[in-house]
Amino acid sequence: MTRGLFLTFEGPDGSGKSTQVRMLAEHLTQQGYAVLVTREPGGTDIGEQIRSVILRPENTAMAPVTEVLLYAACRAQIVQELIRPALEAGQIVLCDRFLDSSVVYQGYGRGLLDAVNGINAFATDGLAPDLTILLKIGAQAGLARIREKTRDRIESESAAWHEQVYAGYLALEQANPERIRGIDANGSVSEVHDAVLRVVSPLLDASASGAGEAL
Ligand code: TYD
Image (cartoon, rainbow, N blue to C red):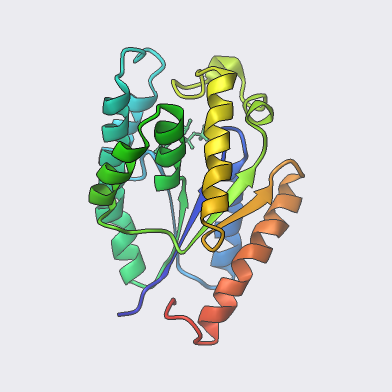
């Protein structure tokens, strides 16, 4: 079965993921690759409806377990409706956040690591990214890029909580050196983009030369 390439972007709030996803998508499309760009939470019609419940600043009563389940529900939908079909069609899938976000925000942030892992094994049916780009910028520096008035429910958590989440990312990076590639996100947009290309290009070369089963 031909299978595409599944790339995810991770990082703290304000790390510039969405911009980098867009720039990489434009680059790959220009190179002639079929690219699907999507994001979590959301990506599908059903997922975007769940997203608005999760992120609504007024939903301060949301229990941590509810939060875990809602993110996992979004993920189950995006995997079934978009990601698996695109990979089966041989496309490159770029996803702005995926399971690692739940591991760090709900696992490390809310202290629900075992639950996150168990529920998400069910939600994703074991689908994992081929490569994850982690945009590294301190939690405080990231948050400082987001105006207070526009912050969603998660972004409105304390700076200390976001530091804990970021520590989770660094732990994940250490534990998964093959899959997760950290990039310094403090530089300019084009510097970060160049660094992203340096990480992604070898995968494309490998598949183009027939070394991998992708594409
Ligand atoms: P995102 O859309 O990436 O926010 P932004 O565009 O501001 O970077 O994600 C929304 C928020 O949801 C973000 O604060 C991270 C959080 N999140 C989780 O807590 N768990 C998850 O599983 C996911 C996917 C996101």
